[in-house]
Image (cartoon, rainbow, N blue to C red; front, side, top):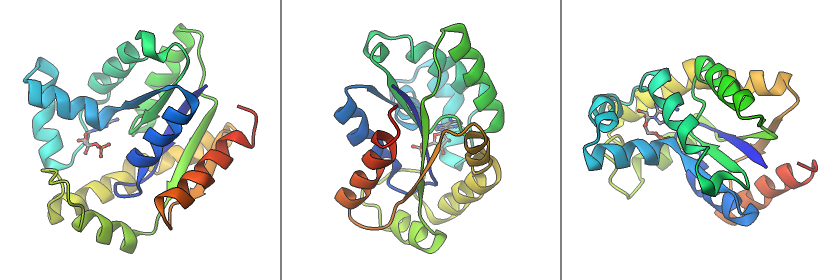
Amino acid sequence: MNLVFLGPPGAGKGTQAQRLATAHGIAHVSTGDMLRSAVAEGTEVGRQAKGYLDRGELVPDQVIADLVAERIQADDCSTGFLLDGFPRTLAQAELLDGALSGLDLAIDAAVLIEVNEDELLQRLTSRGEGRSDDQPDVIRHRLEVYADQTAPLAGLYDQRGLLRRVDGLGSIDDVAARVAGSVNGRSV
Ligand code: AMP
């Protein structure tokens, strides 16, 4: 099973993605985590990406699409994968389609975790993990980038009949149950 996870910054996407991937025995592929590791390790991609991450902007589509295309061919993705934080633009979705068709793979469902903006701001400004992009002006920018560039992807996956909308309000367990139901209920 191959899944895409969509949702604004602060929606709890990473936590839910990790849980669902573990429950289904598929790889959790977080592009944010991959980029943060690349920055920490000082790789070439990390050097290219650092400024974008610090400003809350998206790294160039081709850079991230190449990373993901390579990542989904790793052994741990042979049972399936969950893409967390990718695609983030319509161009990335097209690059993903191309990579998947070349590998004879497809996306089975796209889960969208929905949380209203007031709640997102509150959660992001109180997030205790000390991410360097959790400064108030960077947070605002990341929310704008999401609204402009990533939110339209919901329409794309909806047209394909793949979109599963999940209410992201409530406890982590409550949301996890909704997420699981949204995927399991449709025999993917
Ligand atoms: P995240 O942990 O998913 O919030 O991602 C943190 C940061 O990594 C984003 O603000 C972007 O700078 C970068 N990033 C993660 N995924 C992507 C992507 N698919 N396309 C472009 N930039 C990304």
